[in-house]
Amino acid sequence: MIICASTSFALVGTRVDGVKLMNGPGYDNKQVMDFPENTPLKVLAKAGEWWQVKDYWGAKGWVDKTLLNNKRMGVVMRSKATLRSGPSTRYSKLRTLIQGYAVEIVQSKGRWYKIIVVDPSEGWEGWIHQSLIWG
Image (cartoon, rainbow, N blue to C red; front, side, top):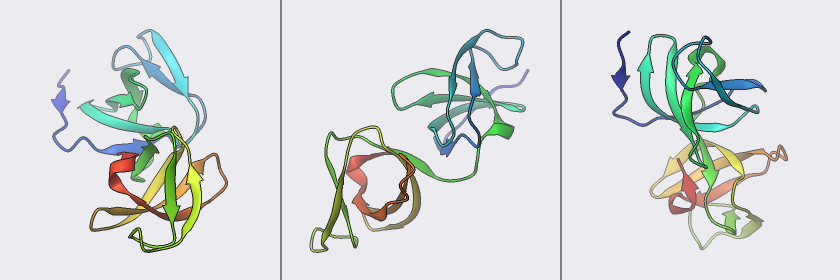
């Protein structure tokens, strides 16, 4: 087996509910836990069809790459983070997000991300400073 370490540390998300996190690359290894749909994961290494990942809370293991999406994902890191109507503090406040919300990053402008909140699945959309997002 060839294991390649990732140099980009990409963040991806789970495509479906119940993605199994294994303690090695393959279903013949012990299952550590499973993830719900839209869980942001940092890619650490790749071994064929299996990617080693880490979630925001620190759980680390291997997942089948076919169960991951190509969306750029992230997690709100602060207990309270302001979602704004544009990429600056000069723009109006839309709402307050809380730590642990999963987001899809759809655009970046300077040090700001345009996001869509995917968990909870309210579909809230707006801009947030990159320092408030893991990803």
